[in-house]
Length: 337
Image (cartoon, rainbow, N blue to C red; front, top):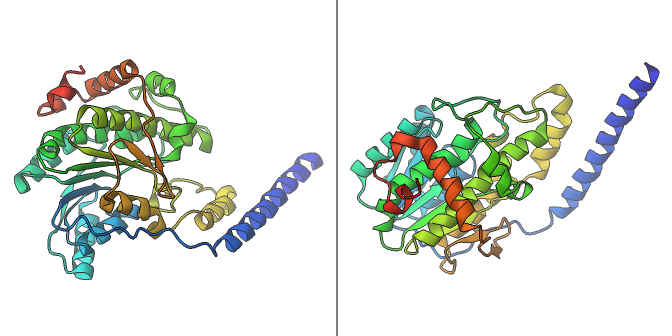
């Protein structure tokens, strides 16, 4: 009994000392110049849809887009919050071309409705920013009976993008942006292929949540690369914002045992302004080539080169899960099934 007690005390002390060391190191690193994009404004007058726009880097980017004179459509699940953000953005920027459309990635029919509503409003789409994502969510199946992380972060994005591709491809100099994550490097394409979102998942610890998130983000990378290759007239960019302290972590480190860890990460992660800079850079840079991966430090990585047959199998299996909702997708997409 005494040994168990001492072990617990030692573990707590070790965590306290390591936390103190990391915070001190972080404090002295604060002298570094914060990351900031200084690109010329290249979004004025453009029609931009940004998902996950009512909080985090999506909301910050929406303000930036509105200040620069873009016509902005905020897409999100919460209608009340969406209306509130529209008011905030409009009052702060004076831009009256800011609108909210309801979009719930956990419901395929909601995605179809969103596309229909957007198409009634606009005939073109200059930029689609696929920013929305969830992490560390309690295990749950969606209305479509699919694992919620995988559907929100990947399958829903695949469906939304596919349904908008014809509009995007017929808009000159159009741009697709996929917000990625370094978590995709922690899993393999084989992990994505063998993952079945129709089955309930069992997560025991934080690493399991990271792996699940990584699988969804790697699947998204494969899809983004497919679009870059098959739709050469569209600029496709993947963006990694880095670790940013936003509401995406609202389900993480909630127990009293994790209080110290939650505080630690809230101090170490980037704030929303810095986290949004890679996305703002992607929106305004004139030098990006299609298919590149923009890191959190605005460095450019080339195409990963996934096996075409593996890509075809993965996307075919994914599209079958969307089933009846695929009407209106380009031939390059529908032919995969």
